[in-house]
Figure 1 (cartoon, rainbow, N blue to C red):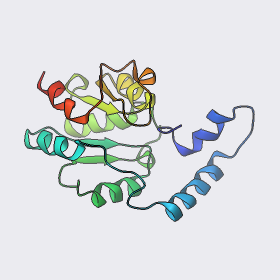
Figure 2: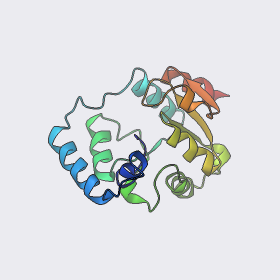
Figure 3: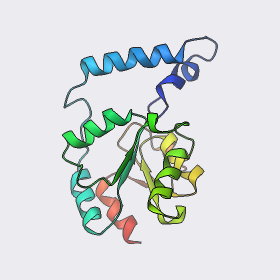
Length: 170
């Protein structure tokens, strides 16, 4: 369910039940804030180095997440990535979450970028579908939350984030 908005998860998991998505989201957030720590979500190998290289090449780097904007901004700051990331959008910044293209479309509009000039990189089928829905190219990363099979619709599938440099150079 990673990638879906919190309020949508109960109905996706248990469509036969009438679970209050807003109550679920509030409860999840309470536990998240209580148990979250610096090591809860680690950066994968070669991510920071690759982001630095892309940034140096003038590539605009953004993040569109199902996390809240505040949580995402705190995460980016805590990892020392703020100087590399030009724009972040969280689930609470848009009306429709992944796989709807709103997160990507807002980013493209902000920078005046055409969809065929962008790549959405993600580790779930929701990320890949969001990119496809926005008309961008997509790159799945096999080591995150999705399986290779669930990322099969991606234009590229990489096992190492550093391989993104080869894709961007194409």
